[in-house]
Image (cartoon, rainbow, N blue to C red; front, side, top):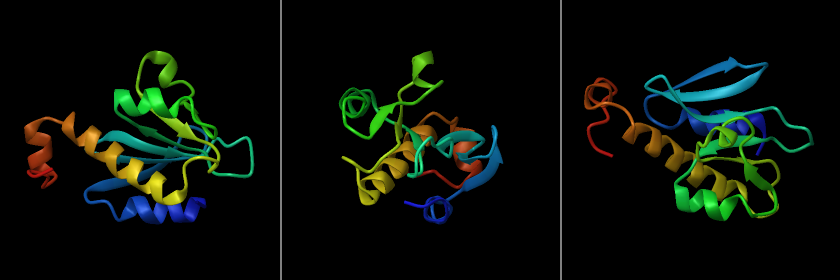
Amino acid sequence: MTLAEYNAFCATLPATTHVVQWGGAHVWKIGGKVFAIAGWSDGEALAVTFKVSEMAFDILKEQPGCRPAPYLASRGMKWIQRWTDETMDDSALRDYLRESRRLVVLGLTKKARAELGLTQL
């Protein structure tokens, strides 16, 4: 997945916003809360970071091409970074990005969800 493809996909998700911050990272948010970060890649592939469930974290952290997200996971948060497509193709990555957004929405207040038009999940 290229940076342009990542941004185009995240832009299709309802009620999301985009900002470039933290040294050029492309950050996608919902209700002011981060659900996806792309950038900071040491290699040729785009590194994409996203929130996951505890079970997904336990599985993905052991998969080639994925790792606990730098900075976030070290603080006890369940975030994964896909830095190669070795075991997670772009289709699966899009599914995880959708789920990350959903997990973040669940953490918003009812009022914030209503303001965003997200009364149904």
